[in-house]
Image 1: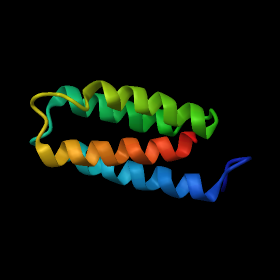
Image 2 (image 1 turned 90 degrees about the horizontal axis):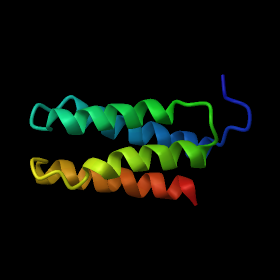
Image 3 (image 1 turned 135 degrees about the horizontal axis):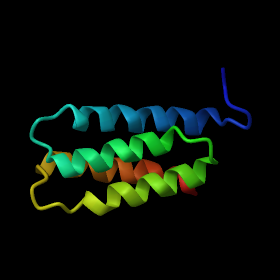
Image 4 (image 1 turned 45 degrees about the vertical axis):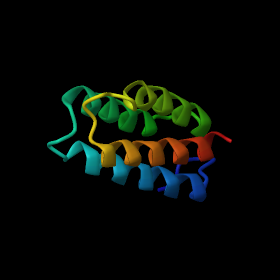
Length: 91
């Protein structure tokens, strides 16, 4: 059942973001500290706040680890894509 004031476009974007986060969470080459931040961001996206608040909170968590030196290059690209999708929700 859809949440009150739900926006199908934003919901679809959040589903896409979660799929990408799940892919990174299941990857053994992604450092644990990065996985922890990604998992926290994923949980924030499930919150009850408005879309912009959830997207901002998740962006903050993910941005903290986006430049981790141990992050594989392809994972960094996925993270940048996720951040871009989150920015589209905030606007």
